Length: 237
Image 1: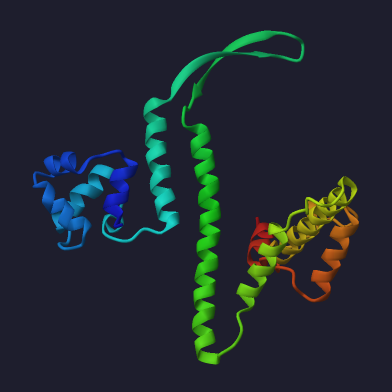
Image 2: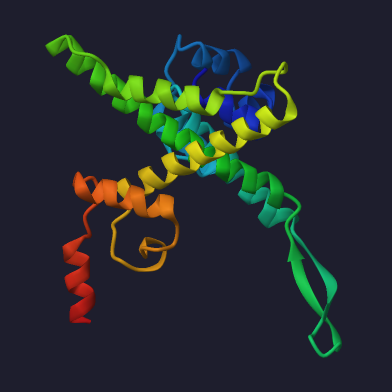
């Protein structure tokens, strides 16, 4: 499926309508979609102007991130078109009630979920890129795949579940252990990827597990270093 096909589905358009607006025959669009004929430059410019989407997206195979970005842009336009004002009330601490006007976006929840999905798919795309690069290096050196092994172990951790034959006490103990494991993994990754500056969540004494993980990453020099350039720039200001 090339981008034009997906964009038309998102925007709920028909190829007959599109052909009429472009002043071409419907079979021409079918030829574009099947890649039997390329979309002429002039028509690409027109499509890009109408949908406010870059020309390249109409002719390429879209990845999941690009698809979600197109959906998000479409919902943004619907929100701008369909939002409305309502009168609401608010009560102060002293009991005084007053009215105010606020905007309501009927697509707010859908847009929020879509942005969360976009964040997930962006990470997945980054992982795929890393795995492809690693596979290329494997072909050169015939080595193992540490990224893949790590992902498999993480999937095993998050995919585990209790056994029905266990009694409630054992199930609860396993669930607590699994929660602790996930917390430890999240904290360890946090300390390895976020610059440590000794403030806020990095302050020692917050939690025994955090202290241990912090010490571990510090001992083996696994912590993400502070950007000295930004630090110096802040001091200069």
